[in-house]
Image 1 (spheres, one colour):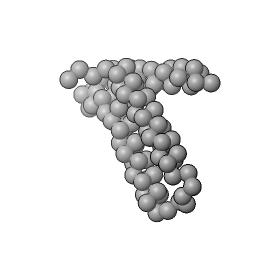
Image 2 (cartoon, helix red, strand yellow):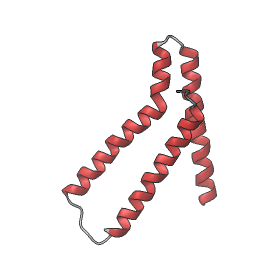
Image 3 (cartoon, helix red, strand yellow):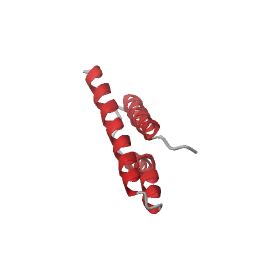
Image 4 (cartoon, one colour):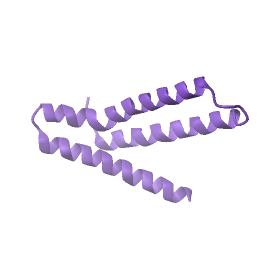
Length: 97
């Protein structure tokens, strides 16, 4: 499989927006219900899952490159992914204002 930092960043943006839309939809369904244990468990589970997804998208390939002793390539891959994610996120936020 060929790794692409730009596709990783697009995947991260899509995941964040998908989770945001899901949270908005769920909160619109349950706006009059009190918080309970299930909500707290679901929030913590979503946080844990999100950390794993983002960790994979941002750090897996750079870590693999570091293990292969390709430090410069690992740093550039990470910075391309992070920079692309930041630019896309900023763009989407600005057009939503």
